[in-house]
Length: 69
Image 1 (spheres, one colour):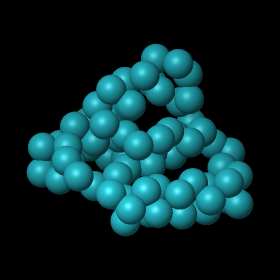
Image 2 (cartoon, one colour; image 1 turned 30 degrees about the vertical axis):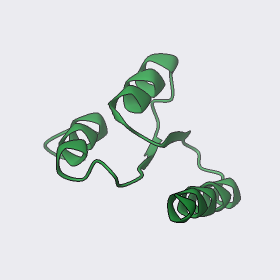
Image 3 (spheres, one colour; image 1 turned 135 degrees about the vertical axis):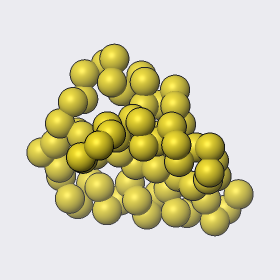
């Protein structure tokens, strides 16, 4: 992403829209990046290559949790 990292964007998003669930997709799924993303406020972190069937289930689960709250 030109100009900023996904983690930088997530930090800015949390200021403006703290209630929006965020599922990050990344090639950098090491434990440090996962911890940072979750600490900043990501709902979940998915690593590439993406299993699109699993991603669809995850998105549906997050939407159901959000609507149930």
